[in-house]
Image: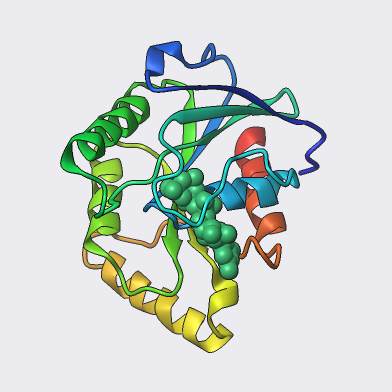
Length: 197
Ligand code: GTP
Ligand code: MG
């Protein structure tokens, strides 16, 4: 897929205030600091379309972008930031859950997982919840520039084994590095395939 245009539309905390649900929508989620906003900038080749930060908890709202006047891309707040006080953490959780369950044009959600880490309960539980809620999702293992190819393959295999305890199969998955621009073609081709279905 060629990204001809990528524009920021709006940020808000409520699903009924989001843009008209008249186009397919793809959202990016994952733990705080996993690299969601950086990946969106890498995919769209717009340096600071989505705001990034080395401090976790940067994205706090549902951020809508429109791509090629054809589909919506959504940057979501991260979940599971341990240092965030309970009240705002619960508020973010509610924003995320209401959006995911209430957004009728949500076509696919990409769950980002830091490729360096062993499977984390919070991600596994989140994906189980997506499954129970019948939300189609795929995985993107991020920050692959931070480990060797061998370690990456090993970690993905560990993840697969963990997922197979609950799932019949591993969902579609990708690997990405925003600094090395890896994974871009594969993720955009996948989006293209879904849009053409
Ligand atoms: P929140 O909005 O706070 O939930 O974070 P986020 O998931 O949007 O992460 P963000 O894109 O802001 O990136 C967090 C930090 O990780 C920043 O310091 C980025 O520069 C860094 N980062 C993101 N992606 C990559 C990557 O592929 N490789 C490397 N080396 N660093 C990355
Ligand atoms: Mg962010």
